[in-house]
Amino acid sequence: MPFFVSPNAKSWIRVDPESDFPIQNLPLGIADLGDEAPTLVTRIGDFAVDVLGLCDEGFIDNEGLEDFAGIAEMGKQAIVDLRKSLYDILREGNPKLRDNSKLKKQLLLPASELTMILPMEVPAFVDFYSGINHASNVGKMFRPDMEPLLPNYRHLPVGYNGRASSLIPSEVPVLRPNGQTKAPDSELPTFGPTRELDFELELGFFLAEGNDFGEAVSVADAEEKIAGLVLVNDWSARDVQRWEYQPLGPFLAKSFATSVSPWLVSLDALEPFRVKGPAQEPAPLPHLQQKGPGHFDIILEVWLQTEKMTKPQRISHTNARELYWNFAQQLAHQTSNGTPTEPGDLYASGTISGPEEGSFGSMLELTWRGTHPIKMVETGEERRFIEDGDVVTLKGYCLGKGFRVGFGELVNPVAKP
Ligand code: MN
Image (cartoon, rainbow, N blue to C red; front, side):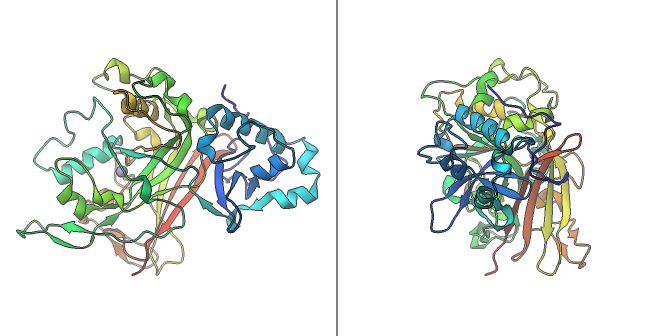
């Protein structure tokens, strides 16, 4: 059973109307406490709340928390039930924790002081390619003499198996990778640092439950398996990608780093923002057809700050509604041949670009392969791709009446050599 919080609900903790984390959200995350074992936390306003601490103090007796071994171990229903318990503890009018100043001091942690790690341990990572404007833009640049979309695009969610081993949390620096590239006018490739380091603005979903070998998950049942959504930055080396990707798809151009935001936002919290996706024409085959709205109205932004700048500049603004294939269709496709999936598996959406300039989800598209550099207003610098020392921030949020539900920020600097 899902658990929805009323749009009018309030917490006894003050939450700024601009915060991504009102009581309607209550995402889960994992805080690294240094010497101690990492703990499960939720987020409300500027505070992270120590969920395992609440458990120790007898505020929560949910199954799955006694011997907590990660969100992936909890199962979907325990995750939903936990959010319900957290709502009760934090709702306006419940004095139990509100009036216990000693415990409040112990269990309410200033979120800005915490180091957050990945919300789940990830056995497998898949990246789809479901942003149709992105796929079309890349087609135009990489295969200028062909139709931008390959013939399969509107019939199945194209994807590839990525590397779970190089997933990194927010704040961790990205290292510019070495790779093999070939200039169009040279006969042989060379090996060295990528000259076209890029980001990809994506969302991802984590599984709370997997499926057995040989069992397909239907589109209708797929959301039952999903623990929640996160922001994903699929860091990419475009010059490496252009040379290596044919005929099997991306490999080393993507596997060096993929960053993931800390707060796992439940589909229950996103329910008020559910919308219909774009019309699918031609209609997908029956096993991939979506009945009813399966997309979410999530505003997405990319911000860039160079070393010389004092504050970041927004360079892209788009929406998750632009995805051609939604999460349920992606999971149905993944399992349609009987592939087993596991709790903690991460599926990223593919780069989400809007239809027009300024709404593209990568530098490749924003600067049209470097031919139209972005001007940084504060310093007059130009960017074709991402330079060492630059900081890339992704944001995602939904606007409700008087509140917003969001993901916070996914911030990664590019390391200086
Ligand atoms: Mn990608």
